[in-house]
Length: 226
Image (cartoon, rainbow, N blue to C red):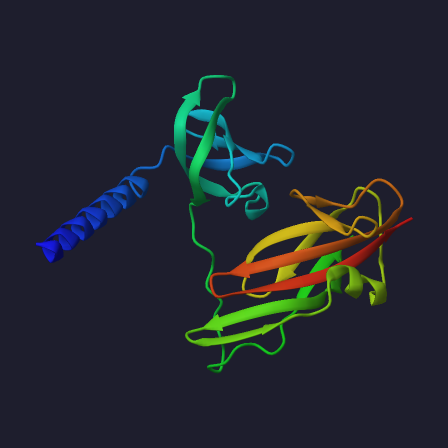
């Protein structure tokens, strides 16, 4: 009798878990392009072609740094949608509408070298590679490299013109996030797109994080605005 009761409880638990998963993975509530990111409130503004603009408040797991301007996402809403202009809601879950690209490994091995470039004023410069991780089956290759601030100390700054645009190129077109580092506070802030050279004179440190479904690489470069 005791054994039957245990099995009954287990079956009920699995049934509830599966049903919850099916509800969660059911039809999403909103789908659209991220047109603005509110870093202070940890929320994104989504342009849904069917329903219009909506601010989506993110949770601690789905942080704004995980998303990009221009990225298409799908959202499962937690609770009601406030009928303000734009509308507002809290995300139960949010994810990219398209999966991360898959890095193609050549010669049956993980790449020992990998290059990235930044173009400023129609001139192409090589970025300094930092930490990376590659995953292929059960094989993992990773390194704990110097931080972007440490790399920047030895990086020869690139002369850049105020308000000019920068573009970044990395092999196999990964998902890309760009951050600007503050050496004094040792903190970073996400850059929007397009990436524009600051209007104020100074030395600026950037980190480009490139992501694939099976790996990621960090690159650093420094510009000098005179």
